[in-house]
Length: 200
Image (tube, rainbow, N blue to C red; front, top):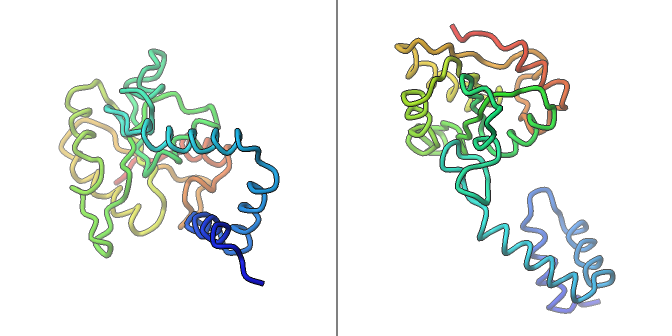
């Protein structure tokens, strides 16, 4: 049986999402066709367009926001002396769910990966150096993933900051080697930050 072109086009769009194969894409497409009203389709379309057009990187830390500064950078009760450096905004969401860390963040939006042609200049590092100079920062906690690329990025940050008085530490306890932070549970992330260690 031939699938109608309109349905096939919808399935193909869902297949573009990470982790979505043909069967899952078909299920999503059929759910929208059979269960969504036309008003719900319009609302879904508007939410997608808003997310794409209104969300951008925070002017301070690089986190996702629909304002100039994200809600964390606007929070006057955060510890201004500590910055937790992460690879992407999803890591911020994961750590914030644990409700333990009270400092600020810096989102790199990538990692140093020579194999992929990604150097230090290709990720959000310049604004980190400016924050270190301009703010009263006493500690940088590096929370990049324990992959070769994450470790390379952590060592690069440590090397750049080694002539400063800033303590540079690395999360450790409870985070298995090779694990991306977004897949770690809340308790694991809390313990990893709590038991961070200075990078030697």
